[in-house]
Amino acid sequence: MADLAFAPTPEKRPDLSQPQHAYVRMVRQKRVYGANLLGGFLLLLATGFHVAETRNAGDFLSGLPMLGAFPSEVLSEGWANRANVPGLALHFIPSLIETLNIAAVSTLLGGICAALLALLSTRGLAPFPRLIPVFRRTMDALRALPDVVIALVLIYVLGGGPIPAVMAIAIHTSGALGKLFSEAAENADLKPVEGLASTGARWGQRIWLGILPQVAPNWASYLLMRFEINVRVSAILGFVGQGGIGADMKVAMQWGQGKYDEVVAIFLILFFTIVVIDRSSDWLRTRLTKGAHHG
Image (cartoon, rainbow, N blue to C red; front, top):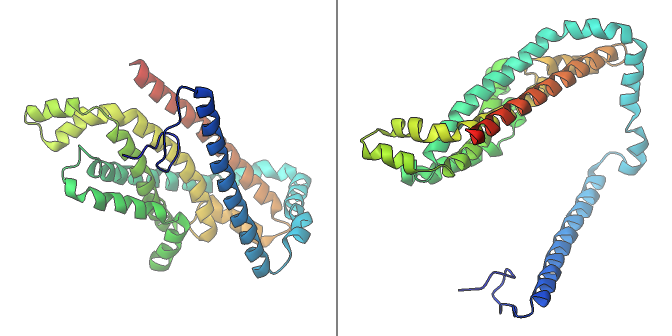
């Protein structure tokens, strides 16, 4: 068998009677590998930048001074009309609630599908072991499809509105969460499942009583984390006609000057909402995981 302890290629194991030399050799090899990876990354970055420059209408470096032109224009108008911002923020609360509803429903639907796919693709738990690769590749495909691409296809089929947004986010969420759920289920202790199987328990009973109590804290933590992501995604999808607060921001930005105070108000309420959700879900995840460990 090839010795892979000190290098990725088969070679003689270093003399452990001189551990300092072996350690120095390992450090040098890691530095060489790291330098090669960094050099390859920089080469790809340079060639990609060159290709982008040749296809760009303008020059990137000469356009850098204009990078802050639009934000400064928005902020200056928002500051000049700052007295209107609180009232505008209240005006956009219904759109914010729609965005939160899209994120919540899509996360719930995607989480249910993810749990089913995870259990069907987990070794030692799947009722159809031969189909495990099929379910795993299904999760890979769902995870590989960007939310925006799915949303654009569904808009073409179903028209604009929140329904395509919910379906697009739920499809991507099922693939992303399915991978995390499956990894958590694979690390679960199978002894309770074996004990339930010896008593004649059905597959659903073995999962409900033997696996879910073990993985529930991790699954809930992943679900809350995904909800945070989906709030931001649902706001972004508003720019492509999916409704919610993103659609209002798109309209305000398209109007240009005279509407930038609305852009500021929308950004502020969206920012504070995401901060509140992030802090709340972080607190809940901490309680769930630490509570499970203490229990």
